[in-house]
Image 1 (spheres, rainbow, N blue to C red):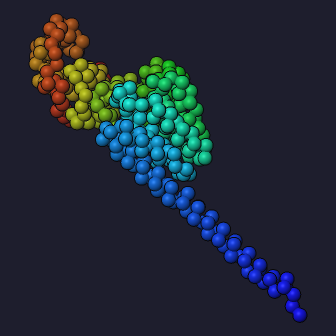
Image 2 (tube, helix red, strand yellow):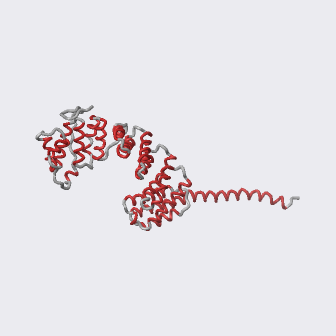
Image 3 (cartoon, rainbow, N blue to C red):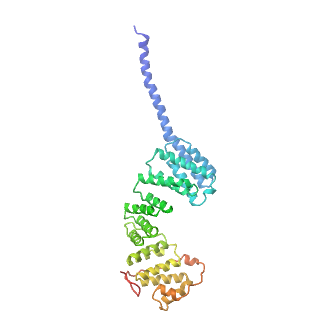
Length: 360
């Protein structure tokens, strides 16, 4: 006959795979919940927090931020980016102290960033954003500053050729008065791709002003203008710096090319244009000098008497002589016309002319 024990055996065998399958289903649901449902809800709350922040409803924004941060999710990059960005902007606008509970918000961003980078230490961008956050808010929380340097270096370690990180680290050191280290990172950025003019511009500016190595800085600034992706000056003040570099290396043709862009630039005053005229004179570009000075006189009539000896009576042969022959005008506030002045410069030739110094 068949025993009871032998009859029950097949049922036990059939129950094992059913239990395993049920456990697998539970695991799959938990995995989907943690990697899809929870991250989606955290993202939803983070976006709501960001929208309330943009609307200036800060207490509600912070509540949503806290709720999102409390959700166990492996994806914290969106939270760290948006919350860091908002606080950085608040600091730069000088409004952090007016933000309700800003210190608690600071602590939240630090906690989020530390958690995220502990799980993803090789992610470059979160290191960079965290570094910027720490550097920015260190004006109010000085103890954060060493961690800013640490995060910049961690970002650079994961992406040693990213120019954005090199530029930011250079500025970090320059702001701390560490000129050698600041210049070194600008130099490294320029070496990554010498045909990117922006990096060479920063390296040249650092050499020229921070390091006091004017000739080397001038050569680097000129190289920035002649790179395959040349640097574009943002205002007249930068154009004056570039013109000074052309003067130092005696590059009249480069100066003439730059001069064509000046009328489209803003941020100039009469002193800037007079300096451009002086450099034109130094390079032997007398027609261009006179064009600039006539534009200055037209925009700022009060300056006209100072250039009469040079432009009208011809008793002076240089800007400096003309200025010496006439007393300075009474100090008056700048007029709107002068602030908006954009001289019309027509560059007819790159050949030096007139009685000024010649191109070497």
